[in-house]
Image (cartoon, rainbow, N blue to C red; front, side, top):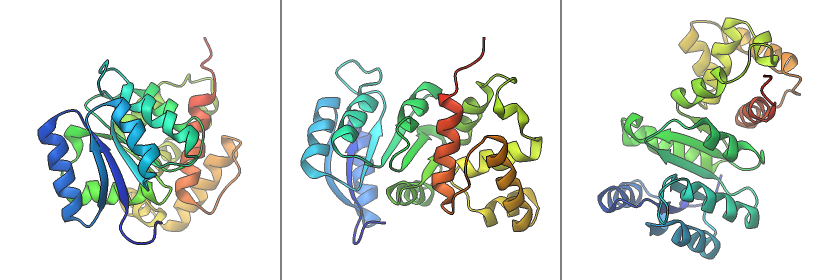
Length: 224
């Protein structure tokens, strides 16, 4: 976790939303190094300020397609491990796949209309800045259902799928246990089973485990 206030660069093309984000973040103690409304501006700001986290709208000018994501990934090539939190109005699994591909640095993907409180947003920022993974449940669901039933994911039990989805949301073992009404020991057992079935080595870092699992799922070619 960064020492002192977390330094951010914000990229959002809508003026009112951008200014609202900046005011909210400053009020909650974050250091907003720059706020921009375009992909070229985002890339320049990231390389200049080298922030602890980039908060990025996926669709930015000039083309308003995936320019924000492309600029963030381009910056990450020069700033390895740069944490990136994507904001979008849409569930686009391919964007999550792009973000997770290098398996380096904190990642997040939140849907704008499903951020219901500033505490939720702030918690997500801090988790991603610390190297964690935070995914909106709808994004997680899209990631999971895209996989063919013949692939390794099909080996998971229904309970293991539930644990995996909650892990991908950035929840701790205790939070997962509370959500599923099971013990933490049971969650740990399910987690071990998940990694065994997906042929992934266990890790002490829950967020890194989530990143590895999602990256693995998205990197495995879909069987036609």
